[in-house]
Image 1 (tube, helix red, strand yellow):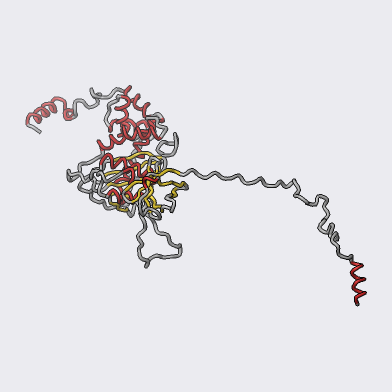
Image 2 (cartoon, rainbow, N blue to C red):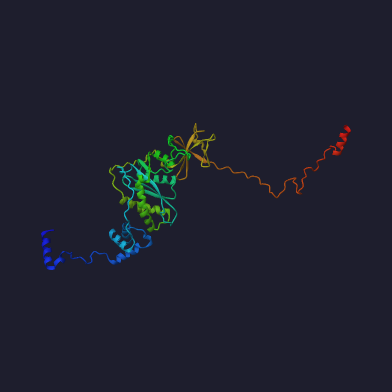
Length: 405
């Protein structure tokens, strides 16, 4: 305290007593106090069903963005606690997992996972969120899909690669989409059994052809960055979709691309330790349409045809080459639904063969209509006209036999 302030307080103490040390504005309303009408309006807005479950931080953002009510987060917290709209969580002891240091460059490692959640809160069909988050910067990319299939994951991979480039490695769980599991009997322990390298899945093959590594996570905590990202999205994104009255997957993807992802990448990302970007460009040799497709091998028959997905195809004459008969070709069912066939490094011209028309089988004889020569009277007639031939009768045969003796 300065000497001047001490003299001022001493003078006031002699004049007014102990009340001199109490601040002069104590008990008086602040000139910056928010009007009571504004507080009532804010609580009426936050008390509606559309803002159910909002926390003070998110509520303050939506009050400013949607309703032009500029108040701090702490003020909204006090208002909501007073109105019974918010109750602070009690701290609890959780299991502690050691944190792994971030990668130093963007694109060194990208965590990839899918969240199965009621994103539309029963307002529409059930959808899934496929997310890819950079380990060094927490930059997020994702899209809503109708099913967690290889095709939809490949579409998400295509969108990420076209936008940011090819990362060095993806970090995922051990789902069947990324790893082929060897089959064994239930009673087989498999402890001393040698590890057999299984053929890659369609996504695993695509990553190899793109030159992208794959690292499996042994626990959900190992890929905690994308798991915590889903936790944030299941809180903020669900409420944002509710406020925006989103009911279809098209609307959900539009809101995700226009609202949530820009907010995330502008607010929750961090600066990488190294400014260099580890993403690599997609080169000319990387045909994304061919790589990101369902690939199988087929054998060319002697008549230069092949069969794929219950459909026969004829290789056109101009595409026939020496050594093609009986050779294996690569068949690609692409994301747009088309089918391409490659022999070596050359694509072949093919044409689907129409299915042969089935010949109508003859009509079955009705059970009511009798067969030709059938007995309609109910008595067997197989002995009828048995003796029409010229043989002697039984009596004549006996007489002949006796005479012979």
